[in-house]
Length: 405
Ligand code: HEM
Image (cartoon, rainbow, N blue to C red; front, side, top):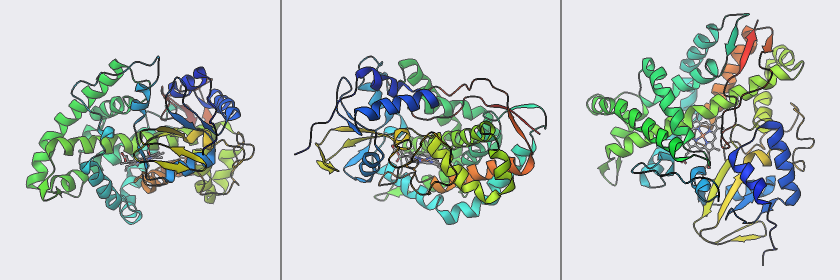
């Protein structure tokens, strides 16, 4: 029989799911960890995994399937319930079409394919980093951090590069609708964004039916499920999902890493002097300022995780950010340390729901940060206080004003 699981004060759980940043969030994680590594249902009717081992083991279980953070938000007393109307967020999909997308993604973004595309996103990185004017203030989050992964995933889906600036705000609205605290107006804006992207996609779907290119859209248009072509609604929803998953995460990783380079004395110079430290820099950045904080799950069958039994329908929120600051696995967790052993971060949800864009996300981030380190000798943070993007799911700066010289 499972031991009784302690319940955290509702106020702490509420703060966790609304989102706090860096020092405040680390302090919150410490408080929650002092209650226990696994927290039981209270006013929030689900479990919350805080300890590293609990998070890693829960991620490995196929019986615990993906749930969206917005669905988690619906469960919290005090948070408003979005009224989605006719719109279902693409990330809510768990059907055959969704499995199809994951298969297509696995082939489109395999390590081999990503290497084939590397020259293209390196060219975009050269252009964006090359556009930075030395000595002038530069908002990285409106520049290279946004534009390299954003332009690349847009083109990979099948959009012409010229429409990126028009489409990007709609993609952002769709991503914001995934937050646990998404209020009806945030959710409405997400629905409107998805509608606008669909309008932009419609002529492209027709064109790819006649004339396929090497892009995700063509692959989806000419794909079949049980001998039937995918409905247009599914094709556009899958493209929107790919867009949403495919760049705001990478953008946050780039922003967090460059912020850390600017904040920790001597770090920029150290990495510039020894470029082989770049992979360790990215790995430690993913731990220290985790770009993703939650992987929510629901049990679709009874399952045991460590010594705890979960029944069908039980919800478990895996708190990636808390796991990354578990002192039992990462001693002195608030210290940025390039010498920590690699391969332990849970950033890409290792397990059955593993991120199929991991290779691309890592390489894009390494490319942009590497270009900045190569081109400049100095980096200066101009913001006294960092404005973080609102939200609990993704963690990255909203703006990052820097001076490169
Ligand atoms: C640093 C960059 C990235 C991070 C931190 C990240 C993180 C994640 C995480 C944590 C998940 C699992 C969510 C869950 O289990 O609840 C996920 C899923 C996914 N990611 Fe990523 N990702 C990144 C980059 C990318 C890129 C570049 C792509 C596209 C090329 C991508 C596409 C996807 C897709 C399609 C899923 C699956 C969604 C689903 O199954 O419904 N990701 N990602």
